[in-house]
Length: 415
Image (cartoon, rainbow, N blue to C red; front, side):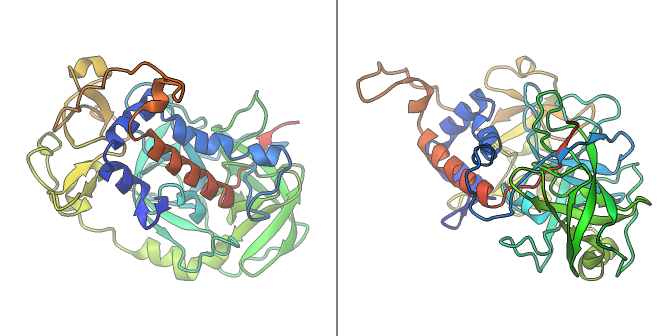
């Protein structure tokens, strides 16, 4: 989660008076604030303006092609809340290394934090309603490499445990001390921005790179002729035999000259292998989704479907879904109109016939106040909604952090 004077954004939104109104406005705008965080980030780069930290930029795979066979490459997205009209928010790319484990870049979790609500998508194109080959899976656990340094991207890696294993073949891991030499060609894969209106981000693409320098825990590469770009961070860099040798983490501003990658073999002994050998926490008895207004929680493990247990000012803990107030989940649904007055069709699970359930707030939200006539000091409209100023401040903080730790993306479009 983005921190604001020690508070996470999620906590501030849930605990701040007027936050409910701000969230209603955000939903009205299709969570435009969050989309703005990502859509605005590359603007300074496109204008040639400097960013906060040189080299920490995002770029797509240039001179690339579609990658239909790289089924182990995934997209990391923010957890979706609504069951209709909500497009997935692409954060980064990643790669499956075990049936229930994904490797990605650590800075990809910066926006929502290690405990944030994330999902991964398996398929060729990220969309609200993927075809039969597309699959969304919830992330149940995330850990950062203990030696990760945000300012330099050293050991910029994170492991994500999926809520359920998938029937997809993982990518092959390298051996410790894998041979990498200057001049060797490698292949990068990701869902990043292509900077081409005919090939937008969110589609799995690939491009060839050539190693320009090799270090003990990282390597740099130039175009051959591909290059990584925004949204490709966390995506795999593969040797010719399909072995995972690198992880995209950064690159030059224009996505044309240099890609910075973490060496995967440098992550094996103290990070990847111990995590793969660990046993996931044993499941505990969870509260019934339809009883969340009556029963309190004490820890996240008691909440169904990965909801978060939140306590405010000494009140009983409640299991919450991101961007929703306290409430309970009832019958299955396909659209808001099926859920009655005050209810919405919310996504309790990532995918499946029972994923969408009618959500009803424990306490109905107060009616929106009658709009006041605009005066000379006010332009009226949504900008005057209570709590929106707070939301705007958080958005500005988010933009600053995104500019400093912007995900690298692989330029996957053909010139």
